[in-house]
Image 1 (cartoon, rainbow, N blue to C red):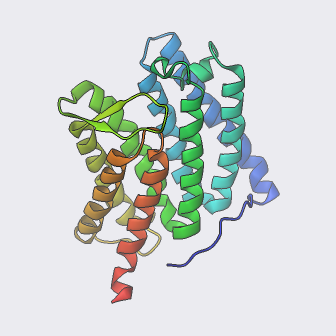
Image 2: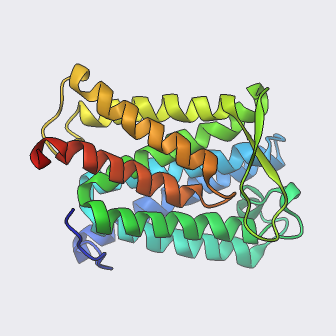
Length: 253
C-alpha cells in the first residue's frame, strides 16, 4: 500500500473560478430542493437527507474523476460553508430542516454535524491511503447508504439493533436495507471497474463480478455494524480499501 498524506490543495485559479460557482449552484440547488420537498410537500426528513447525501457523493465522484483530489477539496470547502450556514440558521430554515430529523431532538444539529465530519474524515483517509480508488468510496457511499434507510423503513420486516454513539438514542437497521446496500454497492463497483472510471484499465464484465462482490460485502458489513452517524466514514474507507486490495492482488502474487 502506498501512503500519501492528504494535501489541502485546490485546482488552479482559473479552474477554481469556473468550478466553484458550478459546485455552489449544485449544493444550493439540491439543498433547496430537499428543503422544499420536506416543508412544502411533506417528504420525510430521512428521504430529504438521503437526497442531499446522494447529490453530494454523486458530485464528489464526478469531480474526482474529472479534477482529481484538488477538485474534491474544493467541494469539501464549499460543503463546510454550507453546513456551517445550516447549523447557524437552525430551526425553520429550509436548508437546515432538510437535514435535521425531528426524532433527533434535542440534538438535531449534532446529528447533522457528526455525519458531515464522518464524511470529511472518510474522504481524507480514502484519498490518503488508496489514492484514485477513493472513487469507489464516494460512489458506493453515495448510492448504497442513500437507499438503505428509505428501503429499510418502507420494506424492512426483519430488524436488528445497530450500535450507537454514547448518549444517542437506540437505533435499528433492517436486513432488507442491508440487502439493498449490497445490491447498490455491487452494481456501482461493477460499473466503475468495467468502464473508464477504473483507475486501471477497464475490466470485462465477467472479471469485475468477483471483486465487486467482495467490495459490496465489505460495504454491507461495515454499514450494518457502524454506530449511527459514522457509516459515511466506514463505507468510504472499506470500499476504497477493498477496491485497492482487489486491484493489487495479482501484483502481490
